[in-house]
Image (cartoon, rainbow, N blue to C red; front, top):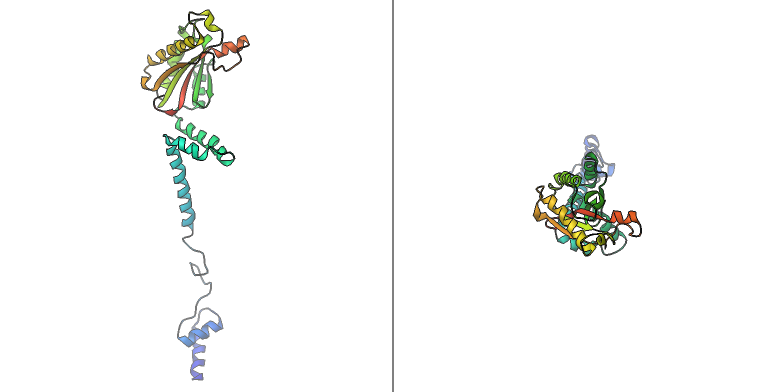
Amino acid sequence: MADEEEVNLDAADEGGSGGSYEDRARAAASDQPPKEKGGGGGGGADGPDPDAWMVTFSDLLTLLMTFFVLIFASADPVEDKLFEAFGQSDGVFGLFRTSFFQEIKAVQRRDISQDRLEVFLDEIGASEIDVVQDEQGLTIVLPSQAYFTPGSTQLTAAAKTRIGELSKMLRHTKHGIRVQGHSDDREARRTNYPSGWELSVARGHRVLQELLAREMDPKRMSVGGYGSERPRFSNLSRKGREKNRRVEIVILNRGGVP
């Protein structure tokens, strides 16, 4: 019997391709081939898992799905719920509210961006027009002294031409447009209007009429006036009052009826 075990051990030494002497001895005793240790490539018990990349890939897909769900949700009334859920606290969530949702709104309104509008105004030589981005949307500021005859609501010939040029871009937006007039705290005294409220509304309405005559969609338009209640500059100086007399065309952040 001892001779037979010795023969088996010798055979294991000659034919074995790997493993320790003890492994080969145990394999010879049980007529099983010896186990390879760390040999060769490919996913042994001690080697790398070839499917490990799927974990990272699935995490990436989850993050992308979450991102696009948030974009979709912010385009409808669910946006208010998202603000309530993510934007009421300070710190990280406060920054999320003031940065992420501003970027979402910019994407929603990317048919007419501020940069694109400023380039267009530069091309047509409309240096008198200002463009302002605020919480309402993208605001085009038309100065009253350049667009209306003094103390009236009549547009000048140059103003009608300029509004016609603006309408070529504005008519293609899918967002609501609000035309809103503003006055200073003194101008109404030199007109037939009882106060700046009536004067500002009348001027806003006159600009609206000119836009509608240029094939603008009336369903996306609205008009209003704020009198002297929303000045951009101080009414204490003549220059400040002059800048406060204006009509604004606001491309609202969200689409649909304004």
